[in-house]
Amino acid sequence: MSKKRLLLIGILLVWVLISCDENSVSIADLEGTWTFPDQGGYTDITVYVANTGNDGIADIGFTTGTYSYWCYGGGTYSGLALVGTYDYNMDDSSPADADASGSDYSISITYSMSGGKLSISCSGSGPLNGKSFSNGVL
Image (cartoon, rainbow, N blue to C red; front, side):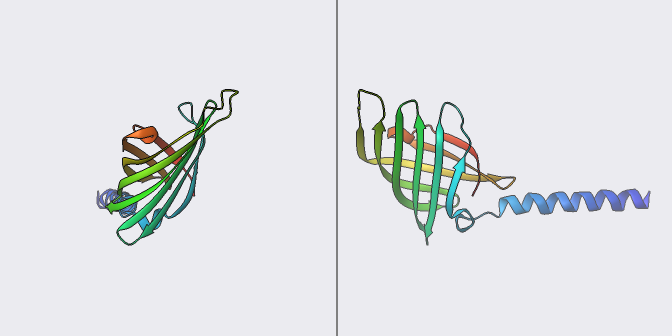
């Protein structure tokens, strides 16, 4: 019985250490350019994360159909969330060539890590509202 308990305690300790590692991620650990696999009708997904103390920068690009978006902005970090504003440019590669842009949209971007891969979830206004991307690699 003693060996079984030691083995159980050892397994539990390893699980706790792995769980703590995922929870101890900071924004500084996420800095850089992340690429994401195609998902939910979106392709060419990239996310750039930068940290300048409590302030941060986020650039997010993606393509859907003939529309390619580049969203760029910044704000203030609270834990693993960036709250601020962003601007965007949209290029339309169809014959209609309906390019567009906008500025000063509100945004909250929540970052999370699982298995060394980044996930983001956006809420606010404009083209990033409701967007979530997962399995990003640095």
